[in-house]
Image 1 (cartoon, rainbow, N blue to C red):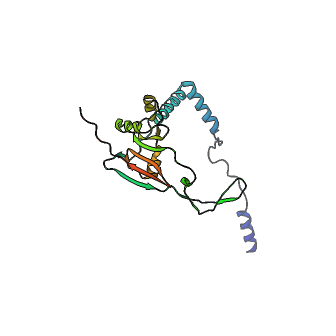
Image 2 (image 1 turned 90 degrees about the vertical axis):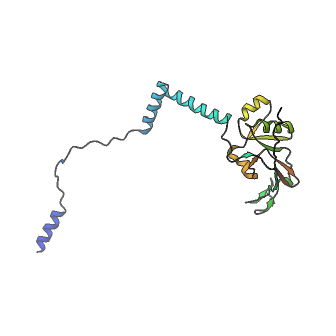
Length: 205
């Protein structure tokens, strides 16, 4: 009985060569970088690369010349005004150049207590000629920054020979709660005064 067990165990542990059961192929992995380089070279040789670069440049230029309009901003139909507190709460302490703590973490600080806002922020629809005329007639480059929520600031700068800006992604209008234009943000002591103005319709001749 013991001999039978030993023989069986020996047979189970024995390795056998059953020969080749089917055709085998070598494993070949393509060099990804070489493939990409070859495709780029073909694209360059055929002019495809130049066409892609030119199309991309045109899209970028078009977006710079006419950024995506700020969503939800409409002409003011009723005057509205409110105060905005620019104070911030510090997440970490602030030290001076000597390493001394000048403001503690958690302390609330109003930037207007340290620096004045010299220029008002004037928000207008750049495609609305009445709003642009209203803003440029009341504000100079020295006392205000005129910021478009729609339209082409570059075209307006060329036509009017003065600087214009754009509220990219509507960050400023969202920050101040502006929903209508024209709107003006200016300093009023330690606060910012925000006002939306209704423009009178042009008189008919």
